[in-house]
Length: 220
Image (cartoon, rainbow, N blue to C red; front, top):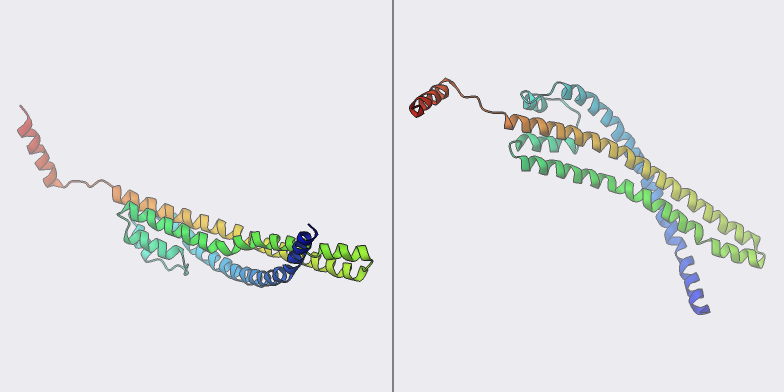
């Protein structure tokens, strides 16, 4: 039993260095993600300010003319999905596939932030608990310096892990709201395309005359 507990102790303390390295990597990635998200937020403000008045004037008869001629800021996911809706709008299956692909692209965009929101606190907790064993050993033998050093590592990893998790959670919430708004706009466009496709065809004068002649022939 003593051999097993000793091996478990050695294994857990050996994980401290990989945990610290992973936390540092996630910390750098969190800073980069925050910077990219800020840039995306500025681009989205310009995009939404240009798109909102366009959507207010949109209906099924001017749909393609307005959207194809619109001078909108570039959006790497929304505009390709919009192009697919306009190109294959007569097919309801194609419209559903374009919307589903857009949702998949949004989920992929959220993957990094979602991973940081979960992995940051987990690694921070591991970095907190692993040094507590050596710290307790130092306290037992009266080595206050070793105990203080291990507690310093424990608290530092906790702070870094929570910081990474907070950045990931904030970015995830912001991007999720953006993608929900963008999906709602695409569904609005898809609904207008469906209305235009389902609009009944009105018959011309010849059709009316042929229908009247057919009714006269069938009359007793």
